[in-house]
Length: 89
Image (cartoon, rainbow, N blue to C red; front, top):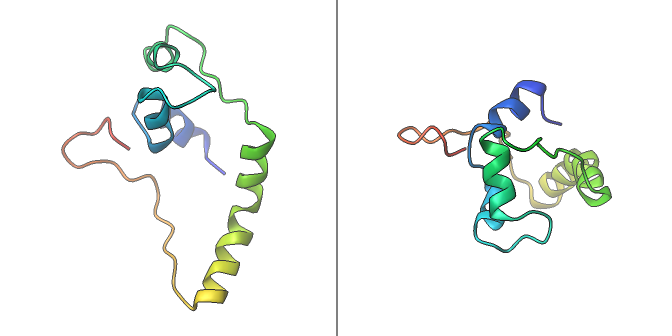
């Protein structure tokens, strides 16, 4: 789950989930809607779909099973910010 600070930071930057929207591949939001959200001209929509909710709830379980089946170590870094372009997360 994201902390409130992580949610605030995501509103100020371009993250991986924003890319399909920017490229026009999202059926959930237009590039213009995203742009207006990032600029504060439109209320940020952080309502989760049922699929996103269950993905979040099951993420740790799936990660643990992947580790067990593949005998690997999985690191869970905090939000990664580009060293030169801090608007890219």
